[in-house]
Image 1 (spheres, rainbow, N blue to C red):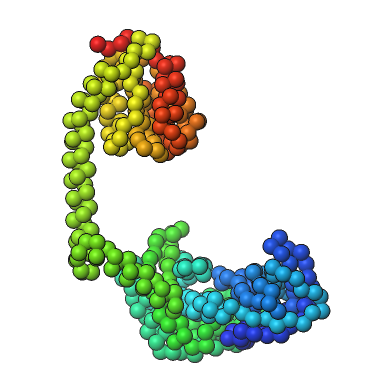
Image 2: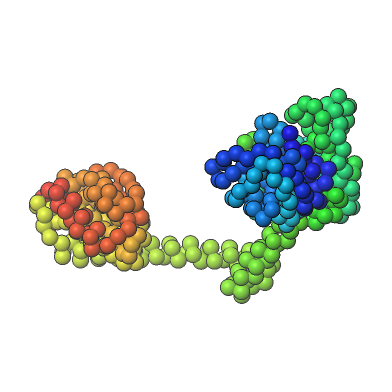
Length: 403
């Protein structure tokens, strides 16, 4: 059993201990100490990192026998006295996020009867999953109230209680374990059983931001960031917005309207471009057919074209295949290439087999029917693709040639 110093001294960054066990581990060696300030992954909070006598601690695990295992990338010996040092910025970041989660979960519970059923502290943002769906207005009010609690700088107290004592207390959620419980009390806002590390006063959380949320398994998943992470998030959003404002030469207030205008213009351009392609397809199809050889009584067009997207290539291939005795295998240029294969009703060429020959050699994916198939993501030499396409198409192309 390891004495867990972080239970009562979460701000402690250094400690002395003795190595009790050393065991092999996939990532190096695992050592068990008689006491530790390193927090193991547990309850949604990741592990601490740091050093033991200069040896890096790269993982910390909670073992079934009650000991804390430290995975190291060096060597330590049983009986060796070691000095441990935590990576404090990482620990404090976790303390801010975990304490902020307690505040946010308590506020959602109190204001909107939305109970938290799970918590995950990620590398950039953290999440809580609420048992039911909540509205955007409810999320905004919870964010406001959580920050009001933080700015009150309420004490965050640690206490211990037996299961019987805890049963008589107004805990936010029922404990999942028996025996002595470690309780975290945040003023009169929240009381929860928790083994994680927390700040001493809510002011140290700094602030809480909720950048996103989504419906999730019948409830709502809330993304949030506290303290330093909230500041990093603000800076990222500020810089992205500033870049967009410079590109569009608009103010922040004008940005949504400018983006909407660009979307409308892009739709109009795509519509106009499609019209031009439709008009061009007939002329281009006739030119390609005129230059194409007859293969097995079929006029077979195999070519690679620049400036044609997938819908345009399909339109052009279908224009060629509209006449009896004609077929087309059209690739886009440059790679990664798109491909469309089409044939007239009287031609025996199987478009799927030609596509399989190309994707089997050059990768990519696609699908279709014997008369029409298309794909994309083909990598390699366009000239080699054309050679494979000609061979595969010629092997199956027969039919009455169109004039």
